[in-house]
Image (cartoon, rainbow, N blue to C red):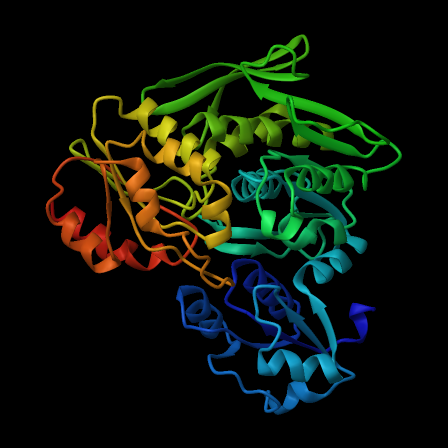
Length: 454
């Protein structure tokens, strides 16, 4: 399909973070855009304010009249939408219909796509890469899986830019539909076993993605990932990893800043200031530094970009930050991500009590990684577990938040969102974390308001 024959885009699931980025992109390019989502949210509110028509009921065959023109309309949908949804069934019979990842694939055919893949860290890393490039002589467009605090958006549109930064999502094997020019791979910890079936098949998916880079195309990957180097040029990175090709050392916190030395072989960049705290963010910054260095950015451009990067909404995002009380909201939804979050908090606030409020995301993920969730949540001083957010899934017998609470033990409790807010009224010091990828973000504003009063 050629995009130049299309005049209108209709999105089914337009309120998703990736879908809304595409909707904004095509709106900025002058196309007519509209769509459906299940429920209103801050993202759908923002889309409507930008002139994009969004509705929240399944219209079936009665989608807006202008978008019923088959020849000039492309329908884009997300796999999170049930296959029986009325509008989806209708358009699949008549329209050109593509998955979000297929549309991204089309975009990567017309620009040099810089993919960022990985079970963890891809949203922060892709947003950081986009920001550093946007501040350089190269510039870029970007499609992000989160709201950049620098751009206050999840999309960056630069029509003249040669490069496009794209979050290469492994869910539903979406990243295999891209045609990347170069990529970063941050992690390959198994996830989405409801899609891949086995851990081995999951890792094979990442190898297949890496193999899309041929004839010496660049893949920057975290040291020790089980990748076989085929036709691509691989550069490994790691913090305190002397065998990595690019090594970060001397990571330390000084006068309110996080700093690191970066070793490119015999060349050393001393005291690079990082905009975000935490070991995992230092690793993300290393990956971005390697990619940008290979693309031809100067050391000064890279240093300035990393220093002024403000992060991504819901990724180690401070909501309250006082001497007595700290509240951080984070998207972590896999045991490895929770481990990084908690270890970073302990590094920054070693003497404070840490209370974590966690909403498990998906019954299948909770089942597949239950031992890991129990182990990492047990490292909190107090673990508050909310009911599982089902997303696209039906309940699985025996897989419940109650079971997580039982296995974590006395420091854990099960609470509804309303009960969480009541608990917050009794918290006057320490560190509070909200953790999860479901709709836990709905309680963040009220929780912040309660804690700010203290």
